[in-house]
Picture 1 (cartoon, rainbow, N blue to C red):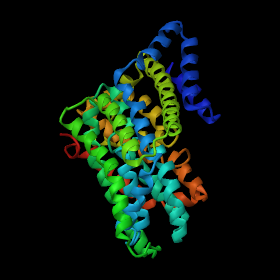
Picture 2: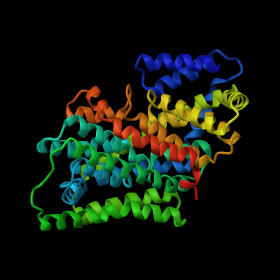
Picture 3: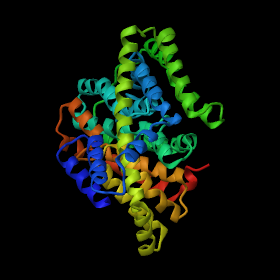
Picture 4: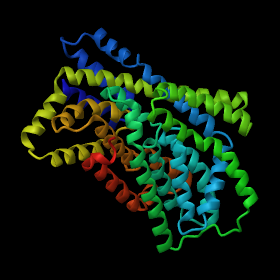
Amino acid sequence: MSALILIVFLSGAVLAVPIAHALLMAAMAAAATSDKVPLDLLVQQMVAQVQSFPLIAIPFFMLTGSLMMGGRLGTSLVGVLSTLIGRFHGGPAQVGVLSSTLFGGVSGSAVADASAIGSLLIPWHKRLGYPPAFSAATLAAAATIDILIPPSIPMILFALTANASIAALFVAGILPGMLMCGGFMFMCWWVGKRRNFPRDLAPIDWRVFGTHLLYASPALLLPVLIVVFLRFGIATPTEVAVLSTLYAGAVSLLVYRDLSFKRLNDAVVSAGLATGVVLLVIMASAAIGWLLTYDQMPAGVAAWITQNVSQDWIVILIMNLLMLFIGMFIDLPAAVLLLTPVFLPLAASIGMDPVQLGIMMVVNLAIGLYTPPVGTTLFITSALARVKVGQTVRELGPFYLVAFLVLALVSYWPASILR
């Protein structure tokens, strides 16, 4: 059964069938060819997976991001950061990294980050005379910091599948996200200095800077509030998601004064459509996961590796290589939902904490977002910069180095992220 699922799914993916539909095709094919799996039971498993209270956090965090990122916050934030660091070597690229990190505390979606930040910064970079390919590479990599800094949609999906604590995952993702941000900024500075990239040397208008800072400060407070509420148990992740949406609406209405009925409607529709896609992937992945578990495939993989590999560090290396490879071809939400049931028994066999596995998986799959052939943020920023994907990939070398160093840290030094 597992072999048939793999064959049908890969065939659908090769034919460019949407991932959720390819998963459903594979599940239906497996159920239709087995007399031990009733079709109605398979449908029940699909529906049961989305009847989960923590899932309510996903549309609300997406709505928060739409409300915040669709208004004046983006312009104000870029104005603040460009004034502070745009004058340094690689400063304009560092503005992109910091913007993505700060937006990470608002949206939780790397794709939304790449689209929003890219549309703001790439035209500015071009006016300065920045290499478009390096600009696209910087923003493609930096956008993935969004899914490490809480709130993070992939972490919610992992917690749902692994029965892990969402709050613990959010807190554990802060250090890797900060290290990724610092490493990317250093690489921007190093490359900018070595290649003498242009900088924004216009005189600082402190009055404009103060205006931008004043406008941006209420929104910049949101990620801090999210972490505080979760770290000290003031509210559950779902409650925090609802509160963050109310906060975003109040800030947009009272501070930025740019919340119209049209923008609210657009934000709700955008969040609803994105949530629908995620839920469809969850349902399809739940069917596949249940079938694979019924076929005892995850336990079989764990048993085979533990019997043939004696050292824990090699097991972790194998897990990382598999996740990196799969992340190159499968969208991040589907990859999280498919890989979690497979790797949980394997992680348990070497005594790895589920929270560490979750962070390791998210970092791995984040790298896949800017790795060909199916790198989502890679294609978005390349299209915005109007450069070929190959040109962008050639500029990504320093960012891959930072990402792999952070991956090694979370993989082999759990004390750095677990509390």
